[in-house]
Picture (cartoon, rainbow, N blue to C red):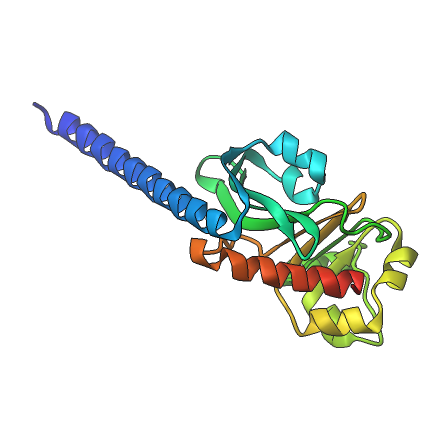
Length: 218
């Protein structure tokens, strides 16, 4: 057998092993998420449907990239609010330039009634450059701490400014790193490219509920 063939076989075995290891890790994660879900008294779906999730809230995160997957969907009620907690994954770019984003998203259908559509995300250096060329970022002169760490965008700027009271600005200034998306009254809350450990799901849900309460002042 030639050296070239041996190299090909070795590469196939290597990538096959990596794929199998990844599958096993995801299986173990789903099993652990199921156990946590049952302890929380929630319903569980190992594989979710992205289009069905959009019916609960057509959030920007569901429209990014390609190869979209929803897994480990937990559905229930907490603090008298309907919620879905799920692992959501999508890919941007292609080939060697592709990047897969995976995060645990808390989706609260209808919990943001009365709020304007908006997107809140951590601000980075590229955003600051974009502002120079007209990229929207709603800043508050009264809260430079908030404006320094968050990018706030949306069509109805005046309504967003009214909704983001000084108390809300202060809360988020002390809580960096969150993504909050509101569309047609539904709210999605997550940290970009961060999946929680299965045992941390209740704590993440409690944090997301705290963010929601701060935003809706309830």
